[in-house]
Image 1 (cartoon, rainbow, N blue to C red):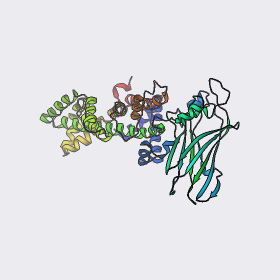
Image 2 (cartoon, helix red, strand yellow; image 1 turned 30 degrees about the horizontal axis):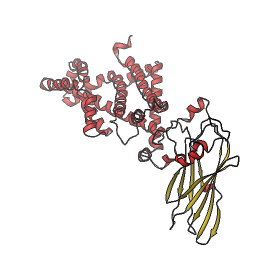
Image 3 (cartoon, rainbow, N blue to C red; image 1 turned 90 degrees about the horizontal axis):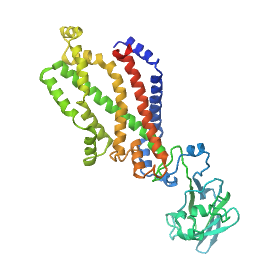
Image 4 (cartoon, one colour; image 1 turned 180 degrees about the horizontal axis):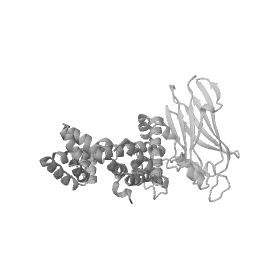
Length: 446
């Protein structure tokens, strides 16, 4: 196909609105992939997905912020109150010091937090410090939260304090501590300024105490969180380049290798062509998905191994017979005889004169083949055979299924990756169908 014909083809492609929409979707996905690999390097993404340090500050199963705002809600976001900004009072005594660390915050949300934790860190102490906790409400009430010995790194799970729950009249602490004292059956938030006072005794002249009070929200970020406090936006972002890379590499590998094998069989004929056809017929009856399930169960679920198996099983596919039917008349074309007469070798004839003749017709098939492999990778992950290391769309769906996300009302956990999968399929399908109308001679007159 000449350069002028290529330009005419692309010019005609712009006449189809579906092609423009498809290219816009694909461009968005490619741009998102480039942003992801640059903004969140691979090693950093793996560390975060495995449960890095920031995850402890995220709520469990929190919905996206924008969904709450669209529905008119005012659910709380996570509040973090650190001792770095507090005015610490110090009172020395013989053998140690007394520290008063106030952790104050303003609470004006309509809903209660989902959990309250206090993280304490005391490094460099020969003897473990001791601290008493006092909760102060906006109306002047004070409630003791008990005393704690502080180690190098400790977490005080205030929400799981059953003794405190009984003192709050059976209300869980993250509700009872912020509820108005009106005695109503349905508690309501008492807005205002709260303070958690740490009255600590340290037996060291220099070492101090770092405290961090975390009131976990019920909404978080653009995509929400899962049962392990992981931000789902990470998996949605990194799932894009993984899905596109898998689909593109699988489509390129299977299409090009299959095309070359079909062209070799057509050119050499005889036992070469017969062998290729018999291998194709045997491979056509082999079920791809069960074989991938068997490989993932018995050997490894590495995404690169799965990609290799997909390409290997896709080489001798039904496409060989289609390419063979298209190449047979080309083999008898006059310009092939002319090339032989001028001394062109077999490899040159196959690669330079036969294959390029059918490439334009194969472009639509190649484009529509990419989302097929994207869905295949996601299907394996949903079945629990996805790469356990990579954060992907299918892995998110698998976690959602195993945790009964839909049953528990966590629709965002399923909808977000499903929408991205559908967008990927829609974008490539719309572009592929438009390309078929442009490059397929049988459809151009329709």
